[in-house]
Amino acid sequence: MLDYLVKRLLSIAPTLLFVSMLIFGLQQLLPGDPAKILAGEDQDPTVVAYLRAKLHLDEPLPLRYAHWVGGVLHGDLGESVRTQQPVLELIAQKLPVTVELALLAFAIALTIGIPAGIVSAVGRGTAWDYGANLFALWGLSTPNFWLGILMILLFSVQLGWLPASGYVSPFEDLGANLRAMIMPAFVLGNAIAAVLMRHTRSAMLQVLASDYVRTARAKGLSERTVVLKHALRNALTPIITLGALELGTLLSGAVLTEQVFTIPGFGKLIVDSVFNRDYAVVQGVVLVTASAYITLNLLADLAYFAVNPRLRH
Image (tube, rainbow, N blue to C red):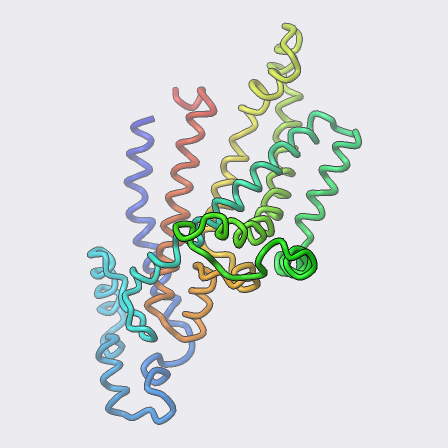
């Protein structure tokens, strides 16, 4: 396991290098000149020249990339051309909001999706199976923004139980924070729960038909022990893979959900940055998102060793 971990860690560096090149290269394809956009309507040539020099736009592309990577290696992701605020500081402000929303949504998805998949697989062909599949179909086909608007109309406008939008830091008021986050977390978790349910059901059906499960039942073990200890543990590998990908998607920012509920997270930050041609912020956010995906995939690979003893050898 240690050798495998070392190999994976060594592979992260070239992967991040390739990702950084991709991020920087694709950024150059966006239309418009940031210097002219920032110069305003007059576009004074002196101001444009000053901005181009400040943003290193007057240098060759390889030199600009080297300058950016050098800053990244020293913890400097650049500066927002709109707010004149360091990109790292902006990310530090927005990332905790998105992390909290992602973890709450993921917890809801795990709480609903995996038990529903197990019940559906164990009770294949029963009313429980049809009900779980109906829930999965509903979760997969319901747009997040539409579900969010309906929940606002019901729980905020009609019943007045929850705030319609906004964000309160958990360090200021934990109760108000949870009331503000529960609806967007459920909206995001609902769709992921449907995906997890389908994958859990498929993996469980395959495992439940295997020889070692029939042997466990023949030994007289209880159905609960057979399902949870023998079947579920061996069915977790594809679920872990899917969970890591879905959590990475949540951490990258749920754009529509954050817009509907006015949550100042990664999604809103990336949208505002793209519209404002704030290239440094876009590059920084995408780089952090890519790093999160790589880290989550590494953690998923390590989790395989915990749930599948055969991989340790």
